[in-house]
Image (cartoon, rainbow, N blue to C red; front, side, top):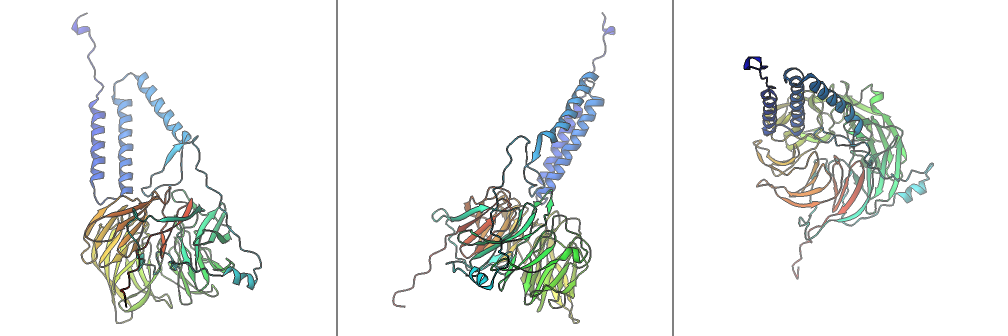
Length: 538
């Protein structure tokens, strides 16, 4: 056979898949190199690059690889079989994490079983004598009431706790631990009792426990259940306790007023249904704001009233105001530019309202409704407010001024991406903001917007500023103690408090730290510094 009789040698064009792989690797490296691009965005972009590279690889294999058709078709059949089998062989354990990624396990692996939730139900026809007996308030040494969400003053700050930061020499002491119903609620604390919200099957609960023992006191039940495939089941808000009453806002929009001693329902409103408002994608998350004789909650996903007020004693409507969709943040009471106002972060705006009438005194456009907002507004001075959100929104500082007609105006002082609070909130101390910037603890100077440092990897957790310390409830479950100082990051201690995804805010009631997630709850007694010695003879 001569050379002319030989078939021409044909390659498989391997340069094409190699090129695709190189471009995909380069694209993913470029995405990861973007310092201010958030983890969830990085995950989504990286996944999109992988999918595109995979599709191009399939096109090369089938149409351009020059392998035998039988080989090509066999590989495609194997790929199709794997595509069909993958969702049938795996399942999502729990819900998505803060990056929007699931935890996949084999379908035949053992399911994590939730321990049964045991709670005391309020007795029917409770007598006044029984109510008095149930209301006996235990004086807990070292305890301080935290009657609402995000700290005693709803600003993410605990003052005067005097914690000992040396957890190596003086370790926190676990007082109790028990199962919890599904929820992303935190704890309110009043009179030696702790209050939270939980899901038990098809029932949404408001529950009360002893601070020192965790013993169940009562549970109020609403036969409703909220579930969202990314965030899971159960309520999202934290009860507010005021003058012997508990105000709780469920994930479907049911607002209850309960007797704190017994759990007896005093009044209820189905806020979303009564006002023809649709629910938010991830459920109602507003913790009720109570002041004077007024209870204020947020609306829903329908443009209309973004704030609604009710009488504290009867539940009768007082006012409703605004024209935006609600967000996942909770309203706060503040004084800005000398004017007392209710502040609300909404889907597309930041508004200030007259507490007595709900009249909108300030309507400041902020971002779009494309991405959710959950971080609390932070009042950082007599006329300045800090706003932040994740998903590429970033943060800004605005200055608020009073106008001659009684209205308020706002102007931007600075805006950047140095604090991107996804569904956590930040707090201020001595001119600096501390919080989780896309999962890393960060310190930002208020005056300039400059980020002083950013360190530690805590996921989509939560923070609480305690004097010159930061308590970080990490997303995986452990609790971290860090220093709140602009000079640099320092992790001081770590506590293996929880072992599953935790989006719940921690609550510090004096020396007692309460933590929980959708599976369990626990209470720790934290070490405190000894009281200063009194000089002899004084």
